[in-house]
Amino acid sequence: MSEIDHLGIAVKSLAQAKKFYEQLGLKPMPDETVEAEQVRLSMVPVGESRIELLEPLSADSPIGKFLAKRGEGLHHVALHVDDLSGTVERLKASGTRLISDEIKVGAGGHLYVFVHPSSAGGVLLELVEDPPEGV
Ligand code: ZN
Image 1 (tube, rainbow, N blue to C red):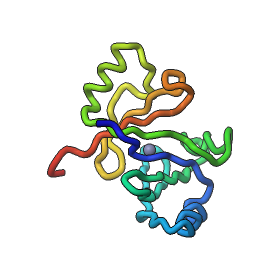
Image 2: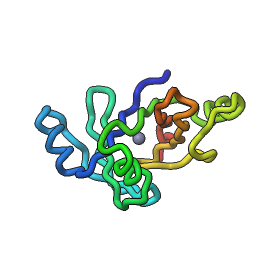
Image 3: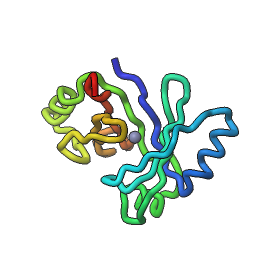
Image 4: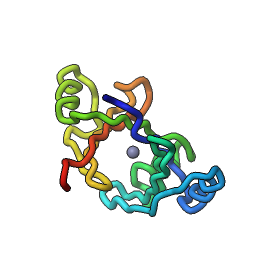
């Protein structure tokens, strides 16, 4: 079953963005740093789903470049899938363009890939699978 796992929002200041969501009565999780993506992030639980606030650690990181080009705003939509490797195989077989061919391990041990906007109706789409049981 797919569901929306989270919405990724690029922000200049994680601290400021968290304050805003706190005013809405939401409770941002502690910050995490993902060195490989040069990003600091905070997940904000919203019911069963989450908002992912993304602050760049450097100007030439993916989020840094996005901010320079587009300013703050919605960066990607993340769908939860049960079988990521099977899904990626199906997408590749149908000629879908992925940002990277390899499945990556992200914050909290989650597995993820990004589908290029040119294959997803102009939206950067992240596909996420839970970490393997017992990890
Ligand atoms: Zn994300």
